[in-house]
Amino acid sequence: MVGDYSLLAHLKVFDVRTVLITGANGLLGKDLCQNLILEGSKVYAMTHSIQGLRVPGVEYIEVDFTDEWNEELLPESVDVIIHLAQSEHFRDFPHSAIDVFKVNIESTMHLLNYAKKVNVKQFIYASSGGVYGNGAQAFNENSPIVAPGQLGFYLGSKTCGEILVQSYASVFQVVVLRPFFIYGAGQNRSMLIPRLMDNIASGIPVSLQGKQGIKINPIHVKDASKAIIATLKLKESATFNIAGPQVLSIREICEGMGAFLGVDPIFTKQAGKANDLIADISVMKKLLVSPQYYLFDCLEDI
Image (cartoon, rainbow, N blue to C red; front, side, top):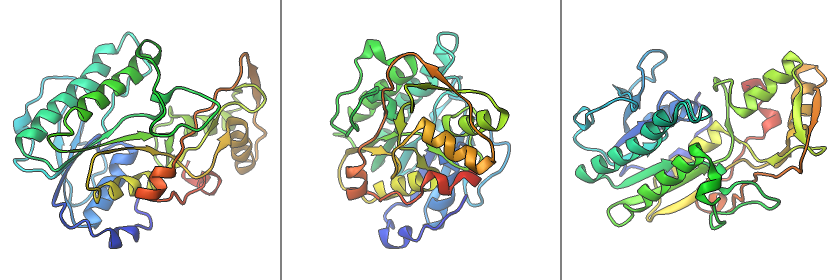
């Protein structure tokens, strides 16, 4: 999906010649590939499978992170690595624990080792906003993350990835991203935003804690992609929340989707108090970009 990326014109990211992206066939990966090509970068895309739609100008490298793979498959020179890949079996614990470990942790270590060998300038790692847990106040980048024993396996693997990446800050610039509920056209239907839409369309009840359910500020893939491209101009290591401009409860989201579909959503009440997962995006807005896309303006994408 190529949107209005006029921002690229004034970022002047001309020192970035070669970019390696993992998870390049995912929602965010595809958008990044398209727009890095537009701004003149040489793009290598690591994917589990090269089947399906390819972005013109991108050189694809087929690698299965769950199996043994050789760094010799990768280019001899890279300026930036953007590590987006994550296990698609992140909900299937403990049955897919090895898969999650290999994709989320082991691959990160392999890529960091490769990055050192080829003298990359910058390593960008996609973690998760979920590492903060839930709470009544918006989380900023200095908010404490959940204790390891309470994170769960998937988020624990993301925290491990952050620790590994940040350990290399003395070797090259590292940027940790903590995305909050990215959405957009063509997204896997099991993810939160399209799953809510499908439930409403099918008459499946949506469970809410409290009257409104939790509050979140989801981000459109176009805004998330712009934010990542903006990190290419940074001069030092940093951590960023990546989230949208509008805080909405699950009830508000479902009611907006219901109005769009012409269907009244069905809700069931779940025991317990709603614990929100809201990102403070002050740093993102100051140093990267201000998100422009509002969920209810983008329901056609979903």
